[in-house]
Amino acid sequence: VPRSTSCIDHTGVPSQESGEVMKKDTDVRGGCYYSDGVTPVERNLSGAYAYCGGDGAVCNDTFVGAFQVSDYDPRWRGWYEDCRASQRSNWSPPYTFFTTLAMGITYSEPIYMTDEEGRNIFSGVVAVDYTFDNITEFLVDNYGDGTTTVAVFEDAPPHYLIASSTGSKAVKKVLASDESRPCAEERNADCKAARASITSISQTPMDAMLSRSFARQVEESFPDSLVSAKAHDDVYSDTAYVSQTQLFELADADLAWRIIIMAPTELSSNDTITKGDTLFAFLIAVALFGFSVCVVLFFAFYKHRKTSAIIASDWRFTSAFIVGCSLLNTSSLSFLGPNTTPLCMLRMWLFHFFFAATLSPLLVKTYRMMKLIGGKVPRRVKISHFKAALYTLPIIVVQVVILTIFSVVDPRKQVESIDMNGADVSHRVICAHDTNAFFVTELIFEGGLVLLGCILAFQTRHLKGDFGESKQLIIAMYNIAVVGSVVVIIVNVMDSDQATKRVLVAMGILWGSVFSCCAFVVPRLLRVREIQRADSANDTGKETRVHVSGI
Image 1 (tube, rainbow, N blue to C red):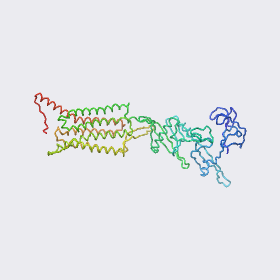
Image 2 (cartoon, rainbow, N blue to C red):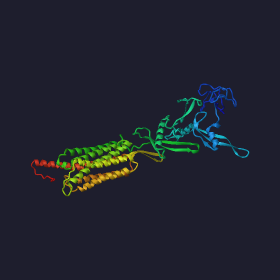
Image 3 (cartoon, rainbow, N blue to C red):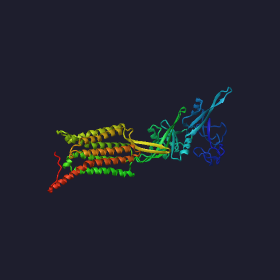
Image 4 (cartoon, helix red, strand yellow):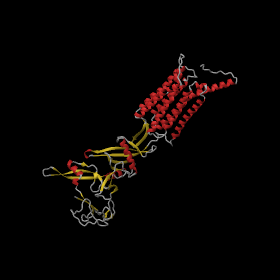
């Protein structure tokens, strides 16, 4: 069956008369030309069966105004054969249309005639074509001017594009001999249709964002929930899009498409503390103030390390405690920056490691003092500085083991939270664990360290003030326990953003560390000053009463 494509006049009748041929999709009249737009069509034969050439060959002796002729028999097309074989309505999978090389699908319905005996006899097929361009036009008309982007693609890899509201073409005509070159002819033996996957389209600015959203959907295995994708790789970028897909499937037609709907959303900045935020400078000030105070106390304490009051307090381990408090304050600086997985892990490690490293020398110092002079019956006990230092390692090692295990089985990582409230979409990126196991484990371990400090303070309560520091220890432990409990309760109960919670934690670290350092350092420094004044009074011949330890 020959199929001809003809020029037509304003009445729809094939014509090749110059000035009467209607230009496609316009009201402009002109001449009839072949696909090159230059060579005029000059047919001189007409008739129902006038035909020449074949397979697109050009001839000048067939239908008036016809500029393309091709051999075509619909009975050998897939949609016809499938409909005839199944004897029911049928949707074809996407295929290349014979005449134009456009891609599309065809809906087919069998036609029957009734014979003399009243039987239905298959007579033919009525078919309706839907090109990808038709679907694209529909999407562009409905979503092209809005912020929502919709695309349809095949569910099976390589996920060929069907249509997109961005207007990007799902198919392009290329030379069969060189697919990098476009094909100008609508139908030519050397032309073929080349399909584009949803990851390869780049005809509009939104195509790249569609590809990003599709990649995130693949990563999440096309979940029912919303999935976000950033517009840029910059970790500080607040521009993001959320997307969701839905499967459209006709099993009998072997047709499975996915519809992806993408809409812009603004990433909440309340969960991070970055440069330019109001809390940025405040958090730095809190961390540096705590660090500075602890450093000043350390140097003041270390400066008098050779005085009797400082020597009796086991200055080496007290100094280690003060240094730990200063480092604990620096861990607050890790709260700055975006919530990336590396930073989330760093925050987890710094705080908990420094917490254990800070308390361990204080607990070991008190334990050694209790063993040396805390017994009811005097006995010879020797615990060297090196041996005491080794006693601090188990606490630190246990903390490292806990952190290492959870870094593998349940790490603190970047987690996206997307909530929908009507048309409003809330998009947050936070640091979180998958379970509460790490929180419970650290609560037991670190809470146990504070409880151990309280027990040691009780056991050394009868030691003389020059050696035992039970009051200072119980004040420090009580301070850490109260501040820590308040911060933990507020952070876990308060429905607030992570930036505010981190500021509260930083302030808790500041208060707990500085107050505890002062509890140990200030009384000793006052004692040093008291002794110095007493020595000065003795040097001037004044009578002064001096407290002596008796040891």
